[in-house]
Length: 180
Picture 1: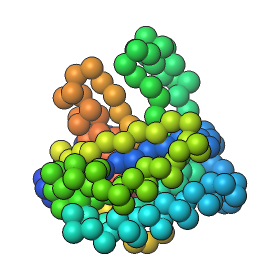
Picture 2: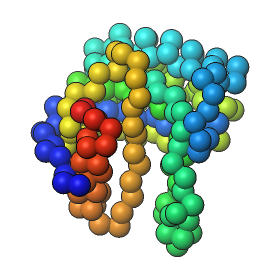
Picture 3: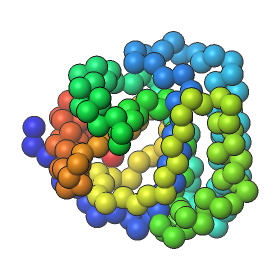
Picture 4: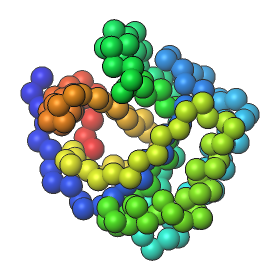
């Protein structure tokens, strides 16, 4: 597969909150357990409060229907166990902010604390990261229902990951009509 043409980032910042609540390697039924359904509803209410902040453009809550198996990479993960933990996140809150500085400011708000604390006692693992986009395919429309792909990559050489994503995005574009 040939890589896709990636465009320049928007300059927006992001806060990525990921949690392992009930990760499942195969597609789960269309219904979640009641406690996870309750957590998703709570996160969506918290997202509404976050979106009222001047620094926040939009917030999306994602619930995974399947996670890729990690058995193929078990040797690599075992060799790098001190530095790498498999990303088995089945709930993600993605906060898009007006800038990277705004993303860092959002982390200290009471509205963000409500999102973060929602996972307390429910998630086996959480990961919070303020970030920026280095490159992108296009704007993601999270206002409609659909399937969204989240990938978590790791490499010793930081230059490897963007090239890996460019190649995989080419595969997704060719095989699944991925366009954003």
